[in-house]
Image 1 (cartoon, each protein chain N blue to C red):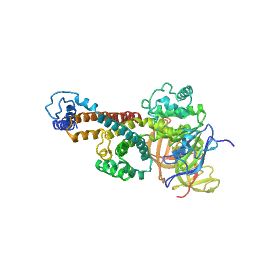
Image 2 (tube, each protein chain N blue to C red; image 1 turned 60 degrees about the horizontal axis):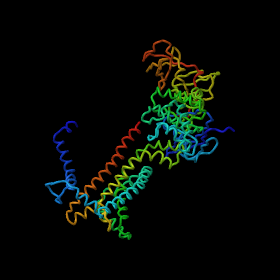
Image 3 (cartoon, chains in turn green, brown; image 1 turned 90 degrees about the vertical axis):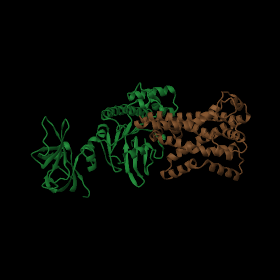
Image 4 (spheres, rainbow over the protein chains, first blue to last red; image 1 turned 30 degrees about the horizontal axis):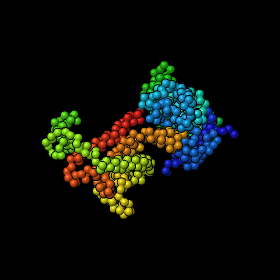
Length: 354
Length: 268
């Protein structure tokens, strides 16, 4: 049996009467970059704080390299965290901030200096030793916080939305830094974010959370191509999720009703019959002469293409379509068009109720 | 706002108020240097004779010593208890907090006369002889809320994320306090402790009830006034004024000057 770097086993927690996490199990392999993704209030930060030891779960267990650490306080766990709004100790300079963990262990000065220098080099802040936190930019503060968390060489690094307070340009740069750091130090990273783009760009695996439950766990492309739920489909990649009825197979074709429309051979195979969700990625929709008739109600130019919102007859919500520009001009708002898609690109999910 | 600042009426009112506040003090200080025992104008010339008289008096020496001992003892006890109380107030559940804070701060609103009398009755009831110890205990009750007010505000301003970060990096609860919280708090605690000392140093009303046979500096001044109008009273008052001013300046320098510095570095 392989030993996981970090493992949560049926973790459940409530704040008062409000359930925050329900029966969440998640195992992180050594060296893996796992992202906990979900909207605010979905429980992802609660899980991170349980893993770090700041919250003791009401039930369930946490294992660090096979050891049960559920009852250990944060300072006795070999896990380090970079918090959302990192704060450096205001009475200490950058060097002493990074050295904090080693000073607690009373390491000799020569070792402390060498490891601080190494850690600062790792986050590309060599020469910043004497600075104070008010002399650093937001991105630099996060780098110092990273160096401070990495210096203990713990096997697992937890990151709680470390980039959310930064400007977009710095965020993209820091994403690159994080990927590089992850390659260089070969530890496990557990990363919390509500930004699906960040999750897709950084992770080996993504855990999608919704209302305290783990909705789906998989590689970024699995999550994107094969969402396990309507929520995951909508949250990752802004898919169109349409309520449909799958009709029993007739003549070898699958057909479905979509509002007033009846479509045949919409996907080649479907294990589902009855109420279902039809998931259509915006970039899989085509505009043209064939398909469902609708009217364009909004256009946004994206450089590489156009984002259309199309009000399709009989559908409550307009569909989002991403169409390559190919040098042309967009269809004007108010013009009518038809929407179609390659059946192979559509995903059918079972739908309960409604 | 600019118009109000420039108006001659407000300027006059401000100057008049300041004069009313400080002119009597200036007169006391001035006459402490008077060459004759007369306490009223005209002022005829400077002399240090009252200072010489005061400093050579054994009674004055022991009063100063007593005031310092009581001041240090009550301020030091307040520092320890008040810091713990400030931490406690920040951490107990919200629903008890207001009630507990009210109990802590109530002594500020009670008249000194009432506190002094009730302490006297209490000490007599439990048969504790009146001494500098009873004075120290009484001063502790008097200065504690002022200290707590400042210390609590400082503890509330500490960023809890810093404590989490320290714990995450391996610091146990004591290490979190000494390595993270205390280095941020100490300037304010020094200021609040100086304030506690200064308040104790010139406290009169409560001391009057619980002091017994000993004397503190304010008691010494009062006894000087009671017999005759001794010109040395001006001198002792001036010394008390100077010491108290120095302590309050120290308190403000640490508690408020440093706070801005600290706030600046935290805000970033």
